[in-house]
Length: 421
Image 1 (cartoon, rainbow, N blue to C red):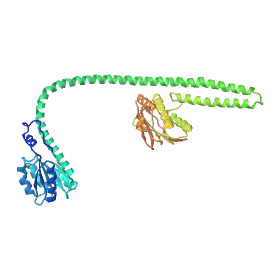
Image 2 (cartoon, helix red, strand yellow):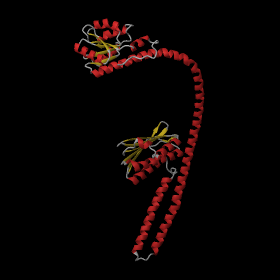
Image 3 (spheres, rainbow, N blue to C red):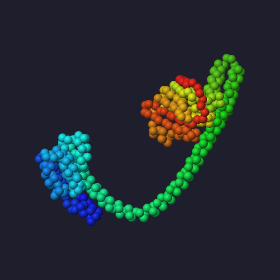
Image 4 (spheres, one colour):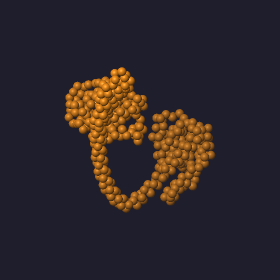
């Protein structure tokens, strides 16, 4: 059995009185079987129950009985339950009485809305199980307790307001102090972010210089050594006896290996170049990279470029090309794709480069994972040139990498589409 509680009996006499008695429920229903069943269930649960079969009996009993809850059938022989609910709620002495409407025929949402609009605290549809009935009544009890607590809380709040008035002045002083400290921390954070951007750009510059140096070392030193090996093989071939076929075959294989190694060195040197060749603009460089990628991997690449593209400066173009190269590398390693669509178009005062493949689709876990160093580097490059990078993937539907960068001057030209295989 549930009783109403009070922290201060003198503060709320009505609550104190209810705490010392059973919860009272007035059950109003013209169906004798339903009335008997509900009365029996509620009485066994420890409630004090009074019955009424008509609206007249309900109104006659409600004031002297002073129920905490009225379980009221909507359809009665003399008056509707909604009318009775309005009468109960309009009486100042009964307005805190909870009313739970019940019906087995008027069960649509419109009827329920009408019942709630007339002041009912709940609406249930019949037949209702004993378990649900008790659960509804207990929920109503909690509602009643909450309403009483709110009224008591109002009194307590007024007292607390008076007590807090003095505290607010001190709190306001501390708040102003905290605001000043936070502003100082924000300024320090801004300086730290600025230093971080500077260090990021500096590290990027160092990386590019190291890549350029490594490209030269690979091209010049390894390339020269391979050239010497090929020349020595040619010299040796001229001096071998004509009837020594095995020796001739070994020399020819050596020459072939030297040619293969030379091409490999040239590819490595080209991949390490940090900038766009002077004779190419960004889109031409992208087309060239796409063509090399298609030949190397067998993945078809389609390049679409809109007219009146805004072209970024050379520094930005170099970073865009690096991001594009890293994107193609990721596709070759992880995507299992057959086709790649590359689009460049103007968006406002910027250049949007989009690379979409038809592979397995990158997952969010892969994007955010600790091993996604390449993706992190791409994001850092984009941020260093004032751009934004977005990576989206869908399982079985491929991955889309979208890069947006600021640009300076427009260049007119015809739209061109290349399909490279």
